[in-house]
Image 1 (cartoon, rainbow, N blue to C red):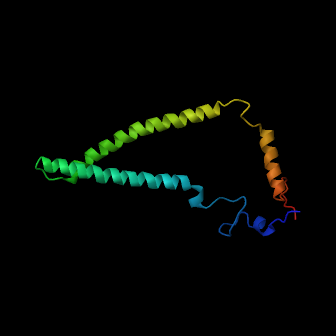
Image 2: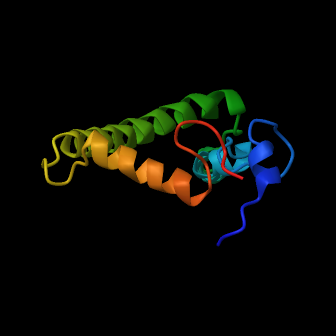
Image 3: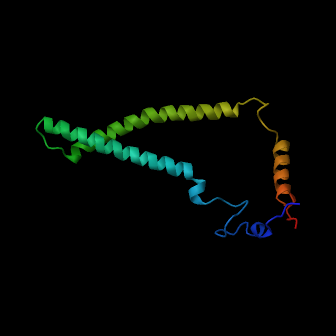
Length: 137
């Protein structure tokens, strides 16, 4: 017979007390993909800013002019928006197309509500939790 951690079951709903089998994951874990994507985005945007400014200042020096941020910023904003427009249109099409095709998926690939409910009941029973609501001890 499998030993169940009744203390862990009692902690459900009390944040900050270790493992919570059915609680919400910590922020960093729950949003790890978004956080990593955000870091990559910021690094690439800062990189674009720096390298584009270097090219801009070299071009200004070639023409005998001083590189001013007020002249550079509109150029940076325009190139950023052009990049985002093309990338986001492509991404939106891919995400919308994927969602649409997933929604239209074949009936064989979709699980019925009864099958999903049976799986959930089996998982709860495996952990010693009565699907009706009371924990087994």
